[in-house]
Length: 360
Image (tube, rainbow, N blue to C red; front, top):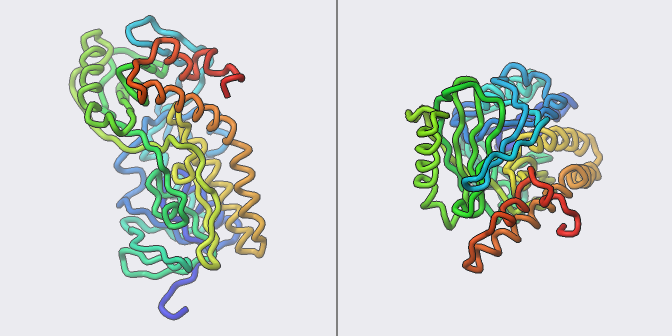
């Protein structure tokens, strides 16, 4: 096509899903262009920066971004004592460094990565118009561009349910090796967290969008409470926020003309609707999407459906369980009622009630 570049694979988004996808496809021999609207990888940080231990099996260079280990989860229900879950192993990472290392890996594999570039339009026949004036007609598009994915929108697979978050960085007054979770009927559609990162911590809170206007007030109250308990400092070292998809799996595969489209990470709705965890699923889905894209380029169109089946098998059951729990809790709020302590426990992974199978 005249004036239109034709890479094998275009990856939109260079977070964990996109960078992993770009690396995977390039290593398999595909010609890959990957773009991100951000000016540099991982900045600004819009993440609580906790990943479970298992991701170490998926990312070789996790150690480069490691901040500290986590050994337990402490869950507080309103003003009650902590319910401690032992052996809840994980790692706090520097998310900016983590993303940079993944992008470095993608470039080393041969992917051409470009930052500060936006998608202006994706046509129905698969031509992608970029903010720098380029026009691309890839064989495969991988949408890894987050909860409000432009690629997902192009194939009619947008995330329809979102949680809004706000997070601040504070100093820790003493070493801490647990992820602290705060559940309350006064935090509709979400929860609050304190995640340690060495001498500092991420203190954040998420809610359903209709209560977004209460985010700052709720987080300020929690910060003041923890500061008065001498757990954290009163100074704000930074502030961020963002959207989290909580509506479950999207359509993972689509087509625009002859161009196949695969969604990965948040764009695919792979974030857990209860916990908001999404880094592990982003890395794994990105790796699988990149491998599938390379197979498609090599003449195996069935690789797209194979990708969808693999992702659904891996993450579908856990996401569906979380969806059932979330819907039940939100029904209580929608009815104008206040969730009881038992309702909150039924909606958090630390409690046996969450795992009762007959409710799924």
